[in-house]
Length: 604
Image (tube, rainbow, N blue to C red; front, side):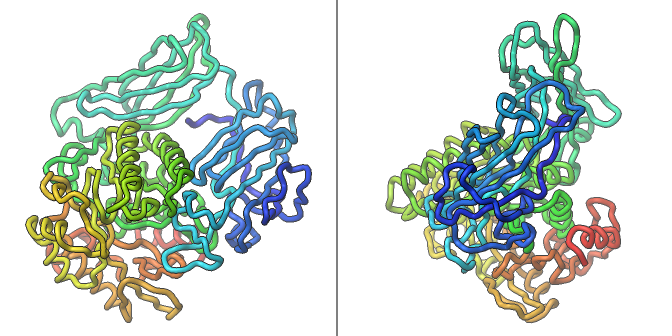
């Protein structure tokens, strides 16, 4: 959905705290501070670093569109505002949105005389445990596995000028069975006599260039591609972490009579499939062992917000450590991260930030925000699994409360109805019930215990039926053990090494860099040798505040030998036989280039 006429509104905004949420209109607010958007006020990058509890915050900015913008509609976009956002333009209320991790857009054409003033109120009760909050702590100071709060605007804000007749929504889904691409185009300002052109291409080759008559506000078509019928011909178009081939897309809305292009947007898609078969995860029809790492998506200076360069650097670091995917934990990640995962080749498990108390409000809010998240991200090739719940958070007492169990089943089925092309994990970690993958969280520090529990398929079955690695039943229905579902260890490891002897914790501890690396190697070797597992997710990529169990510290510096860690992650049978020259660099970038990029992104 890229167009040329847009302008970022990130930068300095007027700002005010409203700790008791007493103001209901911007006219009565004393905007006595400034904040750097899109960084939340709790972060240092915002210029405020205000961490005290408070219910509401206010933003204000004057917007002037570039003079060269011609007639059309003016759209105001918000990437994410946590949690309940209300927007005024020139003192007139124009929108409300609930959901702290999903975007919304406001058409301000009729109220936006230029320049125009935008005011935003964000209400985010820090004590609301039945509100989706993910890892945001409800206590004044971060504790245990919870981190500083994120209040208000925390993703980019921008204004866009679009034609009166324009593409309102554009979505692609690949279909390898027909060797084609499903295209959905929604058009705002429909009138008879319109056509839609769809052009799909890769560098040096046009794959399809079709024109369709628009008979209503929506167009649904399957665009067939030339199929050579043999894998060696098909492989150059298939997307995978090893070969992240994207297909460029251009969509135009045309006037049939004059041939005039009324609107033009560009984007991309990819050909790839994700299926589950005979206890395995299949990518593009072939078994594909998942090597994931848990990624909390936090930065020390900016909390959940990062720049595009930082998102790219995290994708590159993840791949450099030998992982082919991430499990984004308790965070719906910024689309900028998903863009780099698409372009550079990294699989993503998308997970809903949890509420914790079950109530009518939590059911409504989690369901509504999760639907928005699935619809936002189902066009990304990198996203290969949906996780609506984690470790029974938000669905307490799952073993004996029918209401909790019904909610897990309902969101599983709802997710499948919104996207039948990807597996859904109803409740990750334990108390598996309705799911396409059986997932286990097991933080034993001993490699030999991992071998005993998952070394063979029979041992894995016995673990599913009788073990309680997290103190919980792994299965709510014992029959799940015999349904041929893949079994994955989706949290394990968590080795803490603190070079500077700072405070913090981990699931196990190492005294120095070498013992840290050796412990990591022993755990990864055990997991790779386990025949009962179809994949794994190591905890975790980076240190995150008081959690010091990352492979990297919070500033993205390696704690151990990266070459040894890469070999262990990749699963070579005997890492000692692998020379550094044999370890592929997924980008062709030298270590010196990588170092320069990291220094550019994060400072020396």
